[in-house]
Image (cartoon, rainbow, N blue to C red; front, side):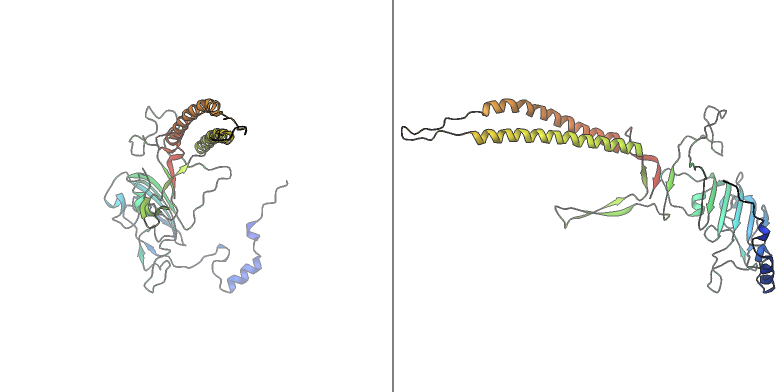
Length: 339
């Protein structure tokens, strides 16, 4: 397929149209200079700030999610360097007139994860979950750790081929017997978790129960909102074992039906002589097939009892193997959670 010719971006819009819009007072056309509200960033003595003309900032300093006293930098901490990228400082700031939007440079603002339009926060040491007001997750340690926080109305990560989200140590040779360490130099001994939390809420919530045998009796239990994801292959094996168990149960039920049917036939064919019948009247003799039927049924009953005991063990095995968090093929992930 022939490639398209690279378009000259300068000619995307008709030059005469652009000039006409400029003369009409439309500022900022074709990336021209534009005057707009830009607040005054409160710069810390230790910070190097590069500010763009359209409310954009690149700040290098120490850990500081908000005002000068916030973060590890506000407490005089060391080894807590930070690079802060902000587009739209105070974008949702509430002005004195009650309207929301960035104020002019007569208002001095600190960075604020809740108010800034888009922000990439890179820190050598931070309590990033606290700074961003994020819901808790199992074994999700984020206090005093190096962190990268990304926040905006919409965040997109697009891999043209694939995307990996990985926790744990890097698989690289030459990092010593303990492998890759944490940014503080401490040992990195945990696998870490991945949590997908929609709505930024992960607390347990009450779940009402219903008793079909006693509808007036209601029970309330707490149900976890943040739950482990399902392991696909383990779930497939679990369902396969359950299907096989159902098939075994079907065979046992079929064997019982056959034995019951044989007993029914035997009982239907059985008759007793009637007492006080006048001489000369023929009477059907007793048909005694019960002993023969019982002889064939008894071994099946014994076998069915053995099969039932084995079936019960299979069910217990399924519970332990697939439904217990310590099971070898637990269908629930120990490290990935979602709401």
